[in-house]
Amino acid sequence: MFVSVVNQNNVPLMPTTPSRARRWIKSGKATGFWKHGVFCIRLNTETHENTQPIVIGIDTGFKKEAFTIKSEAHTYLNIQTDAVTWVKDAIDIKRFMRRARRQRKTPYRQPRYNRTIGSLSPSVKARWQWKLRILNWLKKLFPITHTIVEDITAKSTGKKQWDAAFSPLQTGKNWFYPQLHNLTLKYGYETKKLRDNIGLKKSKKKLSNSFDAHCVDSWVLANYIVGGHVKPDNKEILYIRPLRFHRRQLHILQPGKNGKRRLYGGTVSLGLKRGSLVRHRKHGLTYVGGTSKNRITLHSFNGKRVSRDVKVEDCKFLCYNSWIANLKGWYD
Image (tube, rainbow, N blue to C red; front, side, top):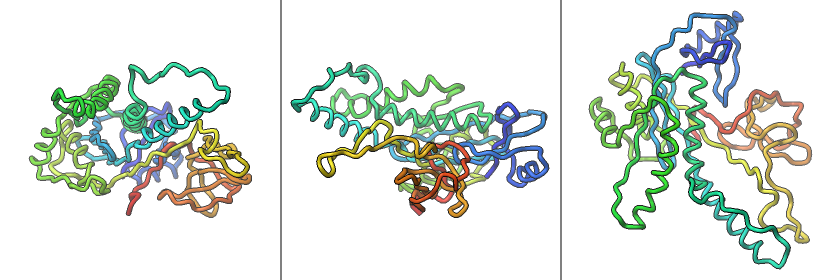
């Protein structure tokens, strides 16, 4: 793993090794900080800012996606992320509950105009916005000069059921690609040729956490642009899982005792934004969950709750976070 470096104006520079980063922090030349779960350093003095071409390769997928940041000399970071898959079911529940309320003999506001007509559906937009969030985050850590993506294509057959299944992919691509600069697209069969040329094989286990599952494609795509290697020089993977927040759900779906519904949702727990990274004197590095009885809950990086009875003053805030990053994988 390499450590990201930014200058005094937060402009990304070439990454450095962990040992050199420790020396810089110890001597006062740099200051360490967290950026969405990844440790970085900020230089406190001016330096020569010579950068090399760095490319990011993206392998899109339905449930898993991969990103690789690479230069000619080094593979700086391999990332495997979980896709945002819960939006469609949440919209269906929201629609069901809204229609149930409309049929009751109670006062209600007039239906508003459907804002999703003629634009991206919420589930498709959430998927491609997730890719763009990851990409914009990485651009703040590395001086990325080029982007290469494995393009998803499907032939139109004229059959309504077949074409409708792939139309959301096309609308998502049409929204995503214009927002990228210096973009190169490669079809799936072209990516396979790149793997075969250097003797790499892709695993058929799509939900696996191994390098051969998805990162192998993002790596060969990045290596195609900058070159420099005939086999992967870094197979370590940073696993990222998006956190789900219930921002506007004011109460649970089913009534409790005496027909009352308790409040539900929100993104702030006693002044701390949920998902934020904190350091607890007993539990160490954790992230903030929900709240109950003037206490907050803390979760470890594997998603398990470590405590539900923590005082806010016992936690040291580190940074805001909307996803959880882990080096060991989520399903090991």
